[in-house]
Image (tube, rainbow, N blue to C red):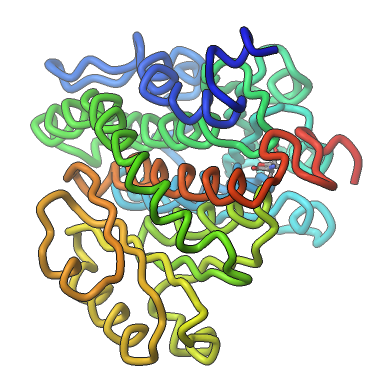
Length: 369
Ligand code: AGP
């Protein structure tokens, strides 16, 4: 087993460190930055459908649902198609309005999740076209979908999803640009710019992984916390949700993810000196707004850990701890900002003596309702 872990203490840590490679594998043969061209062989027969589409529904569970939320921001922003993201378990039981004009994208690492499978069957009966975004080649979901794009993250052993999540986000980013290209919603020069940035993401993730020692120190300070809040805005909101899910899954600390602006509608009541609040506060469109949210937490004695863009000094002066990640275009923040949150949960869980690869009560794939 030590051999399989490649010298890492846990599969989860190995899989966190594999991300530069898994994302490179996911991008290979699919992007041509110099030409500003995205090729997705798995869905190319549906290019016409994509040109004449009004609505996309994404169905998934857990971490895959979080990836779907990132996909919603990207597809709406770049391809200008309206997207709804649904928990597969809710979708399947509520007689959803769905027609043959709709495209449903089902996201699943394992390709075996029972609720996601049932949601696909329901949408298929109603005549929708179904795309899959799966990791396990030949699993049940890719066999029942009309078309799809594999994530190519390689086997994920840790029950807590890490590299599968960033690969799902990568595929959804590719889909957003592919749809934008098909629909003429993006200029060639913008595509060249974005694809060049996307191509550099694995290198930026390598840099983000270098924050590991610092994160370990921060983890030591917070390992005995009983609660934790994760806040972000825009596409960093699903990153906050994923950060919270990771922490609760493997360390059993109660954690909640919220859009930062929602804090004042309830969660702010929880803030005291015992409450760590993790902010995703990179220098992008909502930076100034996130700064005011940080001030609101500090004013109430909360302890702030902030994920910031390299070189940021404003947040550094306010937060208790900052973790710097390389600056990147807004579209790609989720891919980079997720890395320190995975490491933070990992170290806290290890310090608490938890079984990180096989947390209690959880299964890698949930094949029953
Ligand atoms: C993630 O860390 C989970 N353990 C879990 O939420 C998972 O993402 C969910 O069960 C969906 O699985 P799938 O991607 O294989 O469908």
